[in-house]
Length: 452
Ligand SMILES: Nc1nc2c(ncn2[C@@H]2O[C@H](COP(=O)(O)OP(=O)(O)OP(=O)(O)O)[C@@H](O)[C@H]2O)c(=O)[nH]1
Ligand SMILES: [Mg+2]
Image (tube, rainbow, N blue to C red; front, side):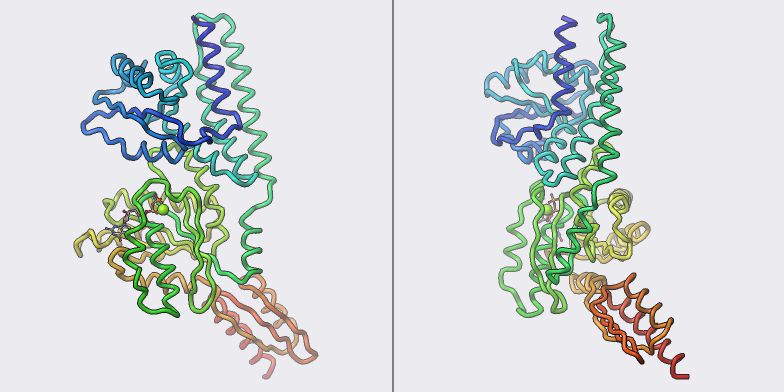
């Protein structure tokens, strides 16, 4: 018995750290299970997650009672779950919570042979693994899996097994070593955001990324704004409302990051949608969300979309968390515009309260309603201010001062050309309007010194 359990635990660890990338061969039947202290027990979100991971949800088993330390659901309910799995021919059970290693093992033992058991975190890891296209993202997913596995390996113990302490120590050390190895490997990989930015720049695009919690309205806003931006040349798009309502309210719809073209102030823009943050995930897992955000770091402007219908404290908390992910990705605060969406659901007083709450923690808060098209002009203007839409050609008397303006321009804007004449230096640059204006001021200061 104890040997059998040991083998099963070993298999658990392998499965959480292997490179197969989770359930990729889509459409496998799964039963979701959810426990809650109070009724009703909502299974909508976990169903969405399971299908995002490639499962077909064929049944749901719910339980209203406190957590059972040994079986999570309670022994009787696990029996029901086993029956449902047998009846439906499901190959996996997805539990909407974090399971302890012991609970996972017990569920495996009580379910029909070969039933895969996923808890919420392992499921999300499987989704990441599916999405991880770049080498960097793959390494990050492997790292997340190891971090998931580590406490399980550490805690795995069977007092009846003689050599368990030794084995446990060795295996935990193995996992820790691999974590350290991956961390240092990741640290030396080139930053993909830099390359992405350089390539798009060469193609002449400005980059705008939409990020934030799931269901905040990122996709709706992107569609709407992309339309609005195109309205520069095509006023009164007839399908606007339709295209917004066609955006399904489904979790993780954006897993496949989508990029749309738009035109802003006559410049081509690439607008990128990102994976929504999900609550109730441990911090290390939230970190791996940031892999999907490497494009945010490369963007000229990042629109952080928040749901104004959240209460003030939740709103602040979500914004704080989103911004800390941005910080980890190296997104500059001055490039962030906070779109406080769904203000149509609020009274004027509530709206004021939420705007103030958001402004406590987030930069450049613009209240909007995507569905009602409210205040989108102000949002577009804020985004446009962050794009390198301005250009200038500046002439300065040759000399050290001119050189220092040129080097300042290299640091703060994109320098398209510099001509060094015997009398004058001519600098052509583009960048954010305020930056270009500052460059102009500096160039003029050189001129006045030179001419006096
Ligand atoms: N009342 C109201 N609902 C909105 C507004 N904008 C979006 N929604 C709704 O909010 C839900 C989520 O919108 P999405 O655009 O899919 O949200 P998302 O942030 O892309 O979500 P994920 O892709 O899951 O991260 C949809 O049902 C939208 O119709 C708004 O301004 N007001
Ligand atoms: Mg979306």
